[in-house]
Image (cartoon, rainbow, N blue to C red; front, top):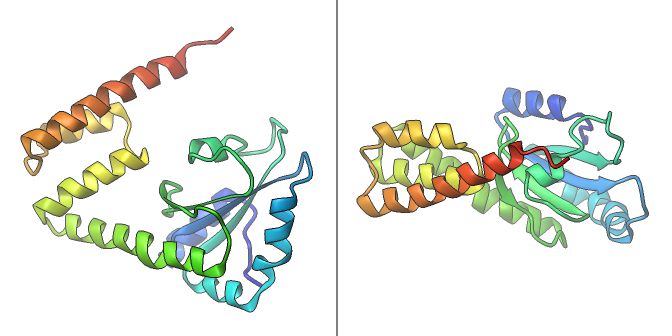
Length: 189
């Protein structure tokens, strides 16, 4: 009913085309998951859930532990660590919000109506040149993991909209990100 997409690249293309966020539902194939089954057999089969399809592209990611399956690291890249998990991204696949405790259609709708809408409004205000919105949007993207160390450094060079305190907080975060990037590049073997 909802028209789930099962390929990430197709979900991103559809979201870009329609100007919608992507709701990613993570489930697994390698072991039974009673909580996933419960959601899939109840919540996802309701008419109320189907109505949400006008607000987002719905992508079902099946984690399989098969290394050749695409995007098997997507759950961890988007901050998840258990099943079921649901996250909302922009059309490029960058996390905007998490749907904590998938209990009802209202939980999902609330995240779409509040958090995702607030993110979109902030992005639009920043694009129009509102300095406070630019600062808040930059910090939000940093917190969501949208920016790597090089992008942050580049932005800091021209970010006349940031206060001294905001710059201090961002530089501390930048140092942590640089250390994490170095650690990721280390071969554990």
